[in-house]
Length: 618
Image (cartoon, rainbow, N blue to C red; front, side, top):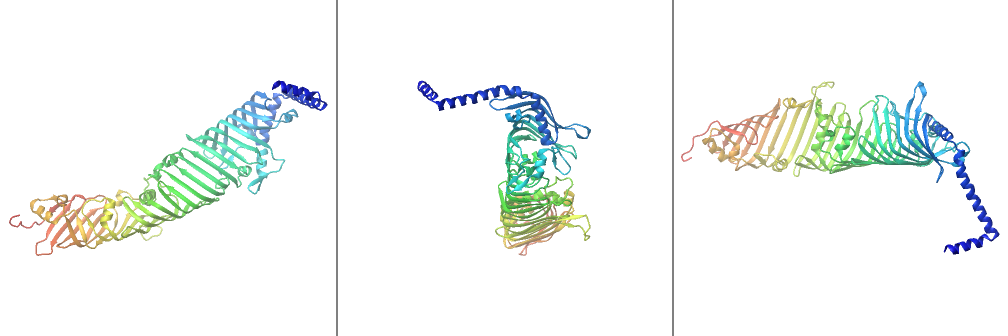
């Protein structure tokens, strides 16, 4: 094969046209070889050093000092490698270090270099360390004028791209970073936020082109992966609104945004946002927030069409996930400059944990200075919540509608409607002034609840209540006022009323025949000793007035088929102890039986007071 090729080459070389082509190729190769050999002697290291320093000053308005030039190579393409670079600002009589770079490599155009003004692009930075400052207005500062700042100031939007005068446009190319560090220093208090172990690449062909950044960094001990793209990078750097598409990912969560943003504090946002936290306690610790503020919340996700400006954030087409609970709706967050932020809107859940909601709101409700503050303690609220199913401990509610308000000094949570199947529950928790003066700073928390048509046996089973409990349908009303802050002493100062009534049913866990027999045989006994039977009744009612944390039972009666049981006495709210008197009055001519009831629920102790004489044979 080689022999045949050589013969073909000689045949073409004998022709006049073939000889001309071969001679031309040979001359080109010879000139290129001589050019490559001679060029290193024509381009001095001092020229490269001065050009780099001038480039830094031209681009950033700051000064650069280069410790040394390790290599200049010309094959396969011209490239210079510099070492120990320092970028600094020497204004105001001092030197402020803005960046140090252990090693920097850049490519350059050979002909431009021979003409004495090389242009550098496609940079590789090894172990750079940048220092940026954040002023009182939260703006970042690094450059001090120069071509970049000029381009930022004079660029204009062109649809979803940017327009830049050709005189200001310049090549950048690829910028690779290996093991970099970025320190952002807040001028007001000197606090430093550090990005460690930065590795990645920025692709920005020219200032007027699209810029992309891909890489990762370690922030507060977590490795964060970044993928950012913008068709209007200069607009963003100048603090104006521009196209932005970016994602951030870590082992604790994921964030994504695609739309228009402004990188200034409280800047404009408009686009699709997504945020997921797979480990909510770890994510809060990373943000230096106490995870107890969302006790029990392990994962959370948010996706919405976000529209935000300086004083308002609007979450449209919102989809919210909290553990296994999901909601959709609309939220607005107002952020005034001089008043507390306000969150308003509507959320519709498929399932809601009311206990966790109350725990989250507890610091706001109780106003206990010793309690851990809530995420919404210093926030105004005006929310409408609904849920197909809601749980409160073991209690199940359906088709729940809630209203939530927290404005200035007043908090209010309304259970507007809920279905207990059977029965309905409505209620309210609100703060009110302790006296009629609107300016009074003394407040109480008012707890109100109304239950209608509920099956108390079902409720008792769901709540896993113990002791004799009625199996009947009825109603329950609770009105309770507790002073703020809500502490154990506050519960001991609670006031209010409780009323309860049912229709016919039975009271399980109580045998009246056994109680009569034990009253004859023993001076006292536990109710659990007579818990094998039940009492059928036609109605049951109870009324209690609460003062100083003690419920005073009044007009409390169980109307049985064969006897009536009347109760009176005191029940402290802070514990389950009892101090009651009971009278069992038979409907026949038999004498009544009186008891004192003490001990604690669900196994109180009964002391017979007037025991009738035993009948013969008993």
